Image 1 (cartoon, rainbow, N blue to C red):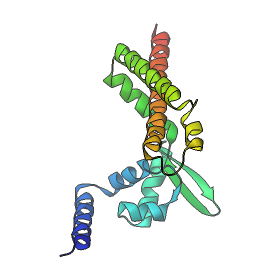
Image 2 (image 1 turned 90 degrees about the vertical axis):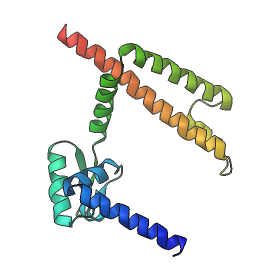
Image 3 (image 1 turned 120 degrees about the vertical axis):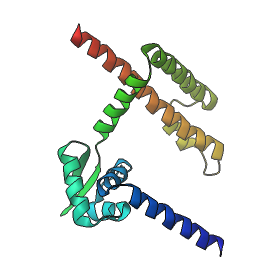
Length: 172
C-alpha cells in the first residue's frame, strides 16, 4: 500500500466516522461555523455529506434562529455563519470562563504583546508590517498572524469587560 492510499483510507475512515457519529444538522452546523464567505446550499451539502434539500432545510432553520446569514449572488442564495452571533458567543464564553480580574490581566498582557510587535517591527499594525514583508519572511509572516490574533482577542476581552459592566449597570 502506498502512502497516498494510506492517507486516502484514513480520510475516508474519518469521514465515515464523522457521518456515523453526527446528525445531518450537526454536520451542517459544523460546516457553517467554518464558513466565513458565503457558500451555496449545494456546496455546504457536499462538505456536510448530506443532500442539497436537507442542507437547505437546516440552513434555512439556522437563518431563522440567527445562527446564519444569507446574501444573494444572482439567483443563488449564499449562506455563512452570522459573525455577530459568533462574537456574542465568544464574549459570553469569556465572561463565563474568566473572572473580571483574569480578563483585566489578559488585556494587560495582550496590550504589552501588541506594543512589543510595534516596537520590534517599527509598525503600527500587522497590516502595515505585511505590506513591508517579502514572501520569504516566514517568521515575520507568523508574527503578522499572531499579532492579528492578539488584536482580535484583545477586542473580544475588552468587549466582554464592557458587556459585563453594562450588565451590572442594568441590574443595579
